[in-house]
Image 1 (cartoon, rainbow, N blue to C red):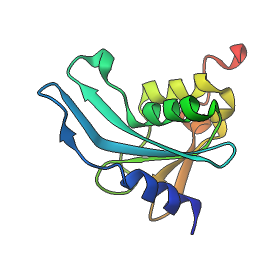
Image 2 (cartoon, rainbow, N blue to C red):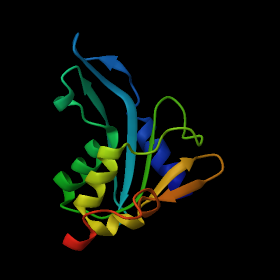
Image 3 (cartoon, rainbow, N blue to C red):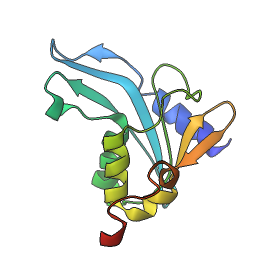
Length: 137
């Protein structure tokens, strides 16, 4: 089984959109990361009406990776809602891109799934070709 199928299946296990309260919606976007050493970590979006409490699936997953393993380097990441990435959306938002780069500048080489069926990927470096923090890392 290829690594993208494994990542997809692990993330899909978390997909369970629901209201936590009248103010919070969760598990409508899921993600899986393959870390530098090959471990797989998952997470989901936790969206609150107060924007500062919003946590995208990618950042939640990266946080889980660090929390449980102290790793900061990501080989691959897949993120989606109810269906696998199909070339439309599914890419990390700007805040997530920035966070992944700040977590470890080696994450510029992270492969991000764009289209699951075609196995089309893009690297974080392609999304942030002139990242402002490169001189600091």
